[in-house]
Amino acid sequence: MKKKLCTIIIMFALTLGVSSQQGQQPGQRFSPEQFEADLQAFITKEANLTPQEAAKFFPLYKEMQNKQRALFERQRQLATVKPTDEQGCLKSIKDRDALDLELKQVQQTYHLRFLEQLPASKVYDILKAEDRFHRRMMKNWGRTPQGGNRMPQGWGGTPQGGNRMPQGWGRGPQTWGRPPAWPQQQQ
Image 1 (cartoon, rainbow, N blue to C red):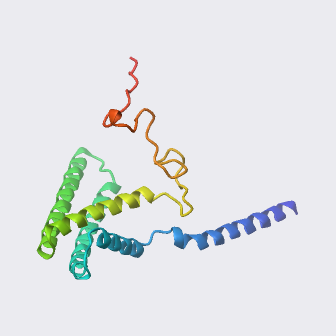
Image 2 (cartoon, rainbow, N blue to C red):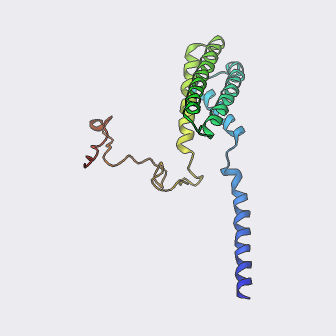
Image 3 (cartoon, rainbow, N blue to C red):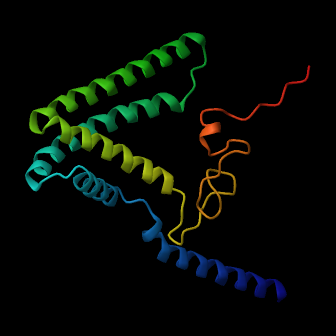
């Protein structure tokens, strides 16, 4: 009887937990459409694009992203399985390098196409805005809507959401660019 009661209570608690998680998921789930909309709004604002400039730019930008995604997918496929022999490893390395070069070629081609539509200063501002947007998204990636951090302590930030410098990596100009003294290896 006690066992049945415990089982019923556990099942009830699990059911409540799952239903409450389902209610939270839309706010916490990644939405590609929302990401794209946020990216476009950020670029438009930061680069001061007019509606006409945005209408010229974003179709080309989306075209570039689609080509890049196809190459990223090929890179992902290469990285999923480690070849079993030296020849296979060599081929995989060469294929990855070729894909990196192809990605840069796509980027260069589209940057030139952007320059045909917009002034260089606008394209420059767009590229900077895109970088800033991606950096901010990565910085905020693990944070919960309540301002906390989903990652365990020490995995990319403090529980309060800030980034902690490693011990000894001071924040003043006297320590910029210099890591702390590493302990000497004992032989």
